[in-house]
Amino acid sequence: MINKILVSACLMGFKVRYNGSEKAPIIAQLAHWQQEQRLVIHCPELAAGLSVPRPPAEIISANGNDVMHGRARITENTGRDVTEHYQLAAWLALRTAQESGCTAALLTDGSPTCGSRYIYDGSFSGQRKPGMGVAASLLSEHGIAVFSDTQLTELITWIEERESDTFS
Ligand code: SF4
Image (cartoon, rainbow, N blue to C red; front, side, top):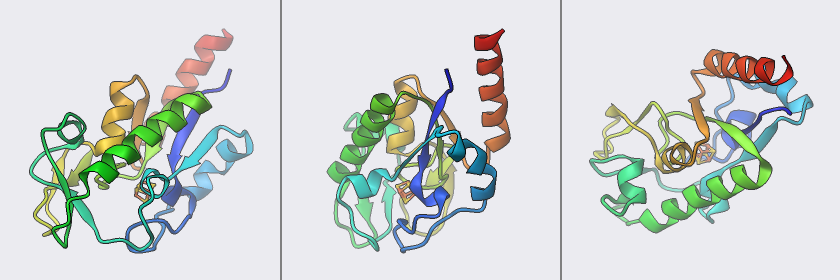
């Protein structure tokens, strides 16, 4: 059985980021997996009803796990509290992954939703810090292996190891 991968829609060239852009520098390397129908393309923020474009949002002085457990908030740069929208985005990503049988996720780093290695610190000044966004955190908490867009090599190795175990 192949390991299916939940992939951020913006990584696949869909212009769904807050500023209406995509982020697809590795799209060519994903074509083979797409042909195998291994990829489940999903944008959690869009699924939760957020618009394109939308104001940038950041987790305030915390991380996605804190937001999902009610210990922190997410606001837009306008000051509007959008915590509940982003919590919904995370739950929808988890539901999509589980219903599609995904065992891994390949997510765009830096996002308050999809970030897995780093996020922004809540000051809206471009300051990064290590940590996960809400969806990455929830997926990881439910046993889905999360990789950032800079960890494609690690994901390839992870899949090869799992599938060679399956078929050996
Ligand atoms: S929520 Fe994730 S998939 Fe959607 S635009 Fe942001 S980083 Fe890309």
